[in-house]
Image 1 (cartoon, rainbow, N blue to C red):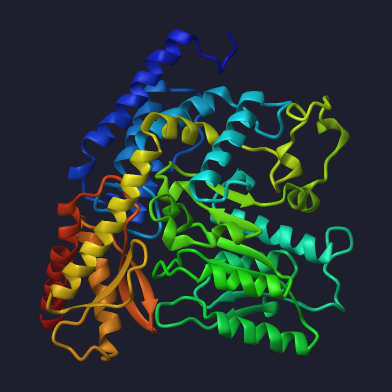
Image 2: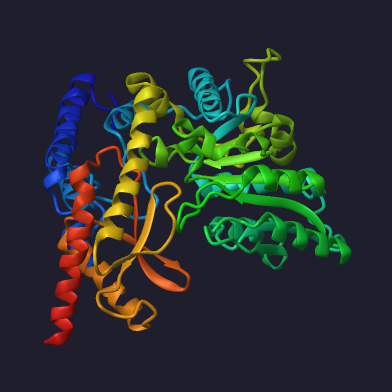
Length: 476
């Protein structure tokens, strides 16, 4: 046995110790305060050490216990950001993923992993009504958006060899509510952020199709050709759903690539397909199983209707990785359809999770999240001193405390900022923030298979208690 290998018996003993730490974390999760224990300086003091020259198994296990103790608790009252809840069955499969250590570059290097990933991607596509789509798992929505727009750039400009033509101006269109990763992708791809057109939204924060049409028409008159339109299925602030069918018609009319950023909302089509009509009109589609399939991070996905468009954008390889078979199954190479070469066996946890629980369980859990959001919105509207700030399309609920102030008072931004900090410090409920109509808001985003009705009820009571503490502190 080598210096860093361990026997199967030692592995079993070590696994039991690690799983005990994980089980203890889950056992106490509902009762734990959500914020991480300690300040930044205190946590650094715990984990900052000189590199260990000699191994110490007991000390290493103690470090794992500390990592669990000083992590933010993601119980049923965690409503921050747009983050799924990491269901435990998938987490166990992720342990096996690391043990197997498959590099999912191609069938040649990882036959079972490639086969399972193709199967899982097909399941997802079918579940959201995009049956004919292929695709690939990614680290998340940002990388899927980057890859989707890279496919658009190559399909429209063939820029991989000589770069984006300087004398042929093109534009990408997205709403003012588009995710920051769209602007980042446009910059990284050399299209230039000056060529990203942000289109107006309506009172429900959805892209206005007529405004898109008008902007594209004006650009064409100036000699600027449309490259891509990015529609959003679930905006990061409010969960708004762009009118996909109308946008698809406009994109097709102007021969623009249609990319849908459905990182947040596309998987809701498993539960409410009628609300997401038009997904299948996309040329490429980003979605995140680590959001609304509750998978442990990381697990994103890019779906596309034309695998040849993916190969045109990403195929560039050396002889040392070429397939050794001409068999259509055994010659499959993911590195010809992705920006990644080294790739983790992300599909294993989702494949196991879906088989263990079944799509029916996930469908019902998504419906429950949607119902919880509507219930929270109703509680807010019934509570004096709170104001609902945006329609609830999916599971993002934007609201703020107004007390007995005029709702237009500029002081309310500072007050709500302080309430957010105080709510999270109290530890029972965790919220994040959004800016709606230029006003600072509290935001609860419910993507959590652990959330109960009583957890939802605590949001209002905790915010009101935090508001009282803020008022009392300012009065003293």
